[in-house]
Amino acid sequence: MKETAIEMNKILKEKSDIFYFMLSDFGKNIYMPKGIIVQSAEAKEKATKYNATIGIAESKKMPIFLNSLNKYFNILKPDQIFPYAPASGVQELRKKWKNKILLENSLIKSQDMISMPVVTNGLTHGIMLFADLFLGENDEIIIPDKLWENYNLMFEERYKARVVNYPLFNKKSTGFNVDGLDQAIANSKKDKIVLLFNFPNNPTGYSPTLKEVDEITAVIKKRADDGKKILVACDDAYYGLFYEDDLIDGSIFSRMTGLHKNVAALKIDGFSKEDYAWGLRIGFITFSDFYKNADAYAVLEKKTTACIRTSISNCSLLSQSIFLDIMGGGEVYVKEKIEKFEILKKRANKVKEIVYKDKYKDLWEVYPFNSGYFMCIKPKGTTAEKVRASALEKYGVGTIALGEDLRIAFSSVEYEELDDLFEIIAGVIRELK
Ligand SMILES: Cc1ncc(COP(=O)(O)O)c(C=O)c1O
Figure 1 (tube, rainbow, N blue to C red):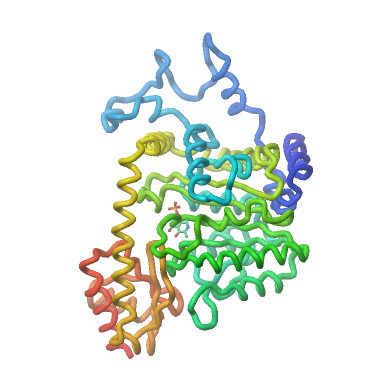
Figure 2: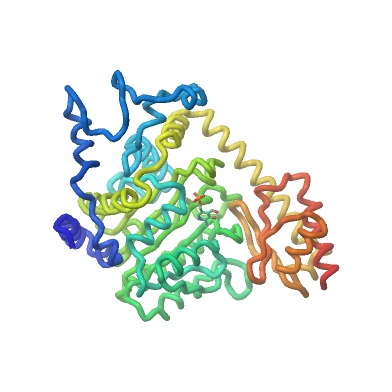
């Protein structure tokens, strides 16, 4: 192991033994060298005469650029568009995102409780960085059984970890399966417990109620008291799209901050779904534990940065500059987000009116949903795959079959078309039954 990695690990072990314990072998070995990146950053501050460090081309203190490219941008300046971004992201954007997290999570009472968010290339990349640092061949990751299918592909195939599922919903299918979570932790033979929560959930559109979040927190605390060491990863891709009043007030991440010495947490979030900017590829990863030690957080940020540096080098400066600008845009930005939120909420409420109608009772079971982009039904008397294939072939209606369930993205169907959509699906199930 390189000297710098040993030094970083020593700090982490002293200041946050829980995060140190959670590291994968790769997570232990990775370090941020005092190489080109660090020397360039130093030079940026101090090289007032000539700065011959930067790996871009400059003229008259501006990046050299092609007008053929620059003509597409009329608000941003060339130096906000063309150069490389820092590997950990644009500092001002990171600060703004941290403030957003604090604003939306009243339980995170001070800046020092969480690390500085590191910028990722969208949330998938954030999840990958989490897995880089904390998951290896001998690890398990415990996730509810209704999940984004990319998790399996990433954690099992890329990282060779074992995905352990428990039923997302309780036996009566009325809400989150707190006992299932408790049992999954208890049944694990490992001391290192890695949990992943994704609320609002893909594919079901479910988020736990406030009461359920209290219960989830109590279970994690109880198991930590018993000596289990627990890392809680929160995939908050659809954060903020909560359509009912009694739901979780912030992210589960905020419940984990300072909860217990044996609990570490991280939050993966970003603009993709929250700001309807899927293709601009900007997300964040943020850490928190009981100790809230600035040196430990700095090590985690550096290790994350090194993971970025060794894979994609850095994330789009253009996208970061756009988001930095709109986050400073004040009322207009907030107003627009509320408008879009209302569109989705109205659709979710309409779907609620439709799917529980008596005429559909013998055609499908509805899973609880209250947030996000999706909802799921379980067709009766036929399979989800048959319904999917037939709806597509005969009626040109696309849905996703996931095992027994059919996922319907109301996020991409107009309010006025929802009645018709479910009528078609109902017709297909009747034909197949
Ligand atoms: C639960 C969940 N997490 C993460 C992602 C990935 O988001 P991004 O497009 O930012 O990589 C998705 C996208 O579908 C998702 O559904």
